Image (cartoon, rainbow, N blue to C red):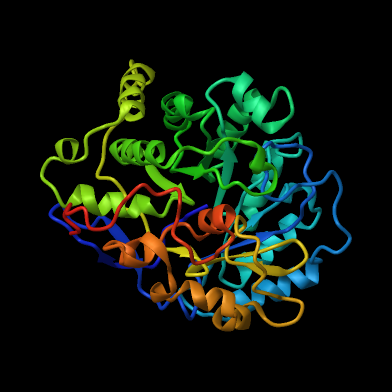
Length: 398
């Protein structure tokens, strides 16, 4: 979930304007986005689940009062307050979900939801949450056909239910975000997933680049070069729908590079995968009327640096894909953990990064995915192996 608010001066400005947005406020003082995993209970068994979701709620979960204290602390940051996303597992497994949304809204937080598509996700529940103040709902669509998506989610029939859920979110008057996890086995379906996203009228398409953690360790991540091709393709279609590349920080580097040259196609020749994605996109979008608009630049926010994750028992992490505990809201307020945790403060020091990330000319707008680095090397501050860029190649920085 990635609602835009408080975006200000832009880093890496190139010939075409403002390719990367930064925040008005100091990310060492307050986050832009906080995700709270309100439960790990979920009826699905998704193959890529970072949380190893379970069938029943954990009795150690933060309860209603704990949750309200957490939200009070987030509100205490003052304007601009962090955006709050309630996720899981499946947040719809919590009977107090509407109460939590209403409370967060009442104290000035912008609250969004990231549910699973199960029988609990109904239009009546969505209307209730909308009336409580929910600003947005994200729905996951990981394949362009039932066979792919249902296999990914571990339950037959979820694909059709997901398309219905997307329509229900829109008809309830709630902002729709579509999340898609891309793997080596599903990448070729992206053009047709894009068509579904456009047909659904989604406000944002968040493409998650698989981090080999949790159940996702059994799936195949893209090679660095294929990821480069996909990121360039995403930038090429970002004038159709706002795009967010999750756990692919180098999407910001690509945005700066493409804005720095008169002819991106010539400066950055397409590999075989991007050529295929382009051809299939023309086929997938044929017959549709999809207006193009100026692309929304990506935002310079990263793990522990404008973003943080609170799990179901109150432990704080740099992100849900980076299993390194920074503290606990049961022992100290979130605001204190965010500002003082050595884990989080180290992520805000670009000089601490090693390898290619540490010497990269795009360090100021990228910094690499810390989750990818940790999952693949065991070192939080190592170079990001999912990025193909070799520093100093001579392509304009902006």
